[in-house]
Length: 343
Image (cartoon, rainbow, N blue to C red; front, side):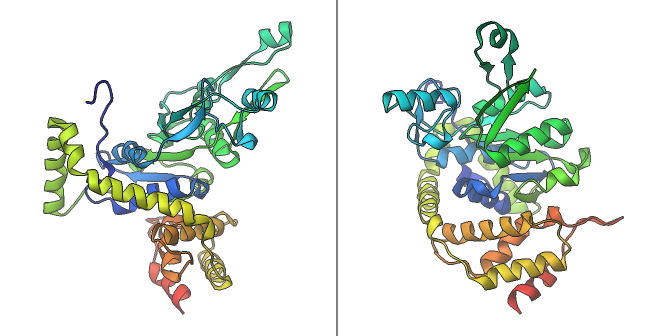
C-alpha cells in the first residue's frame, strides 16, 4: 500500500496469457475495435490483467465535478451540462484524472446500469433530473463485466448498444435523457456456465480463450510471483518498474501513430475472401479485422499493415463469428486462412 492506494498487480508481471494481454493492449490503443470477451476457466488472471493495464495509461484531463468525467476540450463528446457551461464561460474547471476500471455487478438492475429519470421533478418543475448509473461512470473508462454470460440478455443488449454508439439514452413516460458513454468493454465468462447468444458474442470486437498454464516452469512462476506480490506489493512493483515503463511508452507511441497507419486494397481483398470462405455473417468482422490489423502494426511501430498483421488480427476477430454446426467444437482451421492470405 501507498497510504490508502491499492497497488495493482503489475501487468508486465503476468505469466503467459499473451493473447489476452495483447487483446487488452490493442483495445487501449484503439478503443474503436469494440472491446474484448475473455472466455476461460477461473483463476487465469483475467481481472488481474484488466486492473493492471490501467496503470500503463497516462493521466488525462477531465471536468471537475462532472459525473461523466467529460473531456474539458472536446465539445462534441461533452454531456449537456458541460457543453452549456463551456458555451457560456468558454472554459471548464478541470482536474487530472486517470482511466479507471468500473465493475458491473452480476445482479445489476436495468436502472442501476442505465440510470433513472425523476419523473416527478420533470412534471412539477419542467426539469430533467437524472440519477447517473454505471454507464455514466463508465464514460472514458474500462467497463469490466465478470461472468457476462450470466447477465440478463436485455442488460447485455444495453451495454453493447452504449458501447457501439458511445451514448446512453434513458426514456421514461415520454421523457428522454442522453449522455456520453464511451468506454472499453471487457467481458469475461466461463463457457461451462452457459454461453452468450450468438448475436451478442458477435458484438464484441475480439475474443480470446484462456486456460491455466500447462508448462511446469511457467506454472511455478505464477505461484511464486503471486505469493511474492502479496507479501510486499510495493517491492514487487518496483521489480517490474522498467518493464512497465517500456510497455507504457510503447502503447503511447502506438496511439500517436495509429492515425498514420495505412493499408492497401490487397489487405481488404484478403479479409473479404476469408470472410466469404468461412461464411461470416454481416460486415462487422471484416471491419474489425482491418482496425485490429492497423493497431497491431502501430503497436509494432509500423505505419503500414502487412499480411502477418492481418493473420494475427483474424485469430482474435473470427473464432466467435464462425457459424456453429451441431457437435462443432468451435475450433478453426487456420491453414485455410493462411492459404488465402499468402497465396
